[in-house]
Length: 527
Image (cartoon, rainbow, N blue to C red; front, side, top):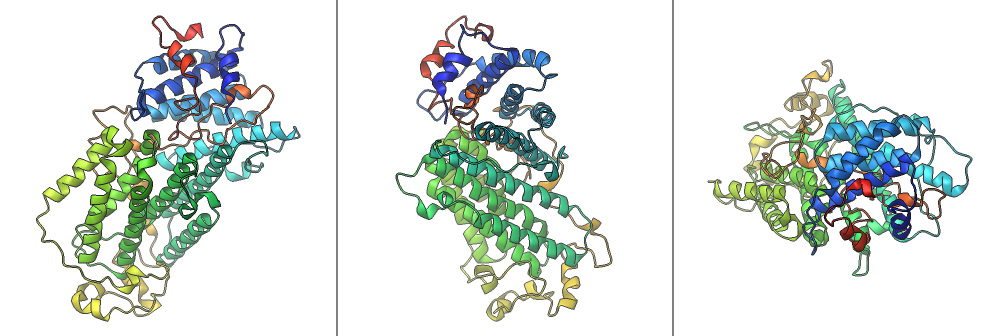
């Protein structure tokens, strides 16, 4: 997957002259790798702390001033690495500038159009284009930014693994494609929840989103199914699969939290179903991390913090539920999550420690009597599709006797649906949706300009979008350049995404070359 010997002998060689674009790429790769080692490798046996990444980034910025006016593939690859460097350091605005420029250069080179080049060159261009598009889409979805290109401008197929490439290349490409598709659904949710819809239109829209999410899940490749994993399964395969499946559940939470009831508010049928869906999604995330969290590397854990924060928010809200079974389940899952965040690679992260402290504080300040276990109603344990306009047939007699206030507003016919949906804050069928409170996850986010150890562990648990989103970003994951691609061998160090180590980092980067660069007197210009 990575011709590291060629990269070290050519791109990082002091004897072979390089063009300005190649020098820019070399310094960009160095900046990303050194910073990755510095920020996200405390869980290794050889953590290295240095400022080489910052020095290389400054050198790359100087080279970019003379390179950005010329459309070149090397410049795009360099911009992708600089984008990842900025996101690792919490500089969202700077990262956006780099990816926007990369997108414009890619469009100028017509990488989004069908090519008549040979198979390897065409495949290489496809990976480069989809890397840029994917990263741009991620920034638009996570930070409420406009898209500079639409789907109609993408006239080329998705990348694919070539026959002579190793399986890990296929894992990265599969992850990239399915993550991109999930981001499209995420972006669509954010857009539609802000649109003006009637009540029935909103319910129909949510039903359609559920269908798309299930279709997305059914298309996941076989190697992402946990039941098929063995001791011999590639750890990269497992990590990428966990990320995909947890992000699916996180997307469900983002959608259904719009229907969550307000405090001291009598819950309607729809709100109970929303609680059930959010609880089920958060439970799936917790169980996945309990089963496989010990094998995650620190850089992967950093990419998962946004999902974990959202999951904990659901559990903490449910722990205060008036329904005993929901409260007991939520408290148990919070204990499980505390165990996960207190060990493994999570223990090295300030924000994970902050989440543990928040959970422990919530338990210590709770004055509620431990709830008595009560069976949940059938529609929570074994639900029918949650967004059906016509309520399903439910066996609620036992539960309704003990909780009559929960079902006072339950509609008996479809014509009465408007009455109980108005209890959610929804407008009537003749009223625009302006009064609907959208999911806080999709509100515009004010991001800080830095990510320091003093700030990442102090954000409140209820914050919808936290600083960790800057770490949970995709990079140029599509760009695993084709083996033997002319003039492109030097670029095979592209990380599969910002939450997974670069192939040039701890496992595959030449340690002799790395440690040599750490000797006193080293400067990027010497490289």
